[in-house]
Length: 324
Ligand SMILES: [Zn+2]
Image 1 (cartoon, rainbow, N blue to C red):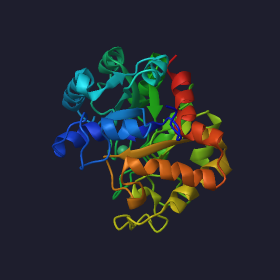
Image 2: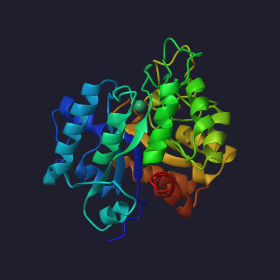
Image 3: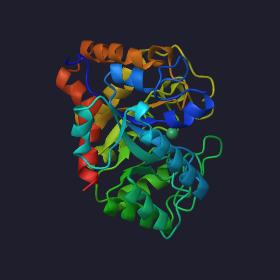
């Protein structure tokens, strides 16, 4: 039966990491956490970038990938590892969830990029450069002690070039401003900010400035909206980002969405979420509330076609453009 709400790609979820801390499995519906197979499937959230986090040291990448493939190989999880663009259709025709292998940060890859090339062969299709830290490739946004003068390193430039050449989507979320602009200077394919919001609505360096939003758009990239209250709340300031409001409503998320669309157009926005990795507002603390959010957008100026782009089309386009 055709679902009444759109097929969705979630741009960033930390579910595989959360499962082990919450003593739950992906296969069975749980009262803990947010994403598992039954809850995602019934809400038509059929695709996600399942992050390996942290990916800051070689051991994290090895053990993270080993655990990742154990999840994929378990038939009870109904997961299909997406490695090429045609795999999206395979998932649509199945009763499975499509999983894209993503490393949140690159500190665990070696500077000669041997492990990056190996990871590509194993099916890595998306990578960040840093989390909220500094590594041999670049500089993340550090919440309490921003390092404004450090950006990408020479190794970081090689990393980006090699990732794009291989067909791995580059994720600029978590970078500091200097690193962001260093990335934009050398990219030849679209980039994504898999889970970031608008800094002019919520003023924290983890979000994107208007100029950054426009630059991503000019490179035909996509920005996945982040449900984290710390990245949504307009009351957040660079000095005070720890007390955020769990009662934030759809109206605040709409502000971020409207702002990005006004600066660019409907082709620039996707659904990032950051589910199972951050504190989210009550209005979206379960994936069963996602259809209500989509209904809200339909009531606030977005068409069904717009919704299909936001939920699926824009991320899909970026994968199609970067994986070949
Ligand atoms: Zn993150």
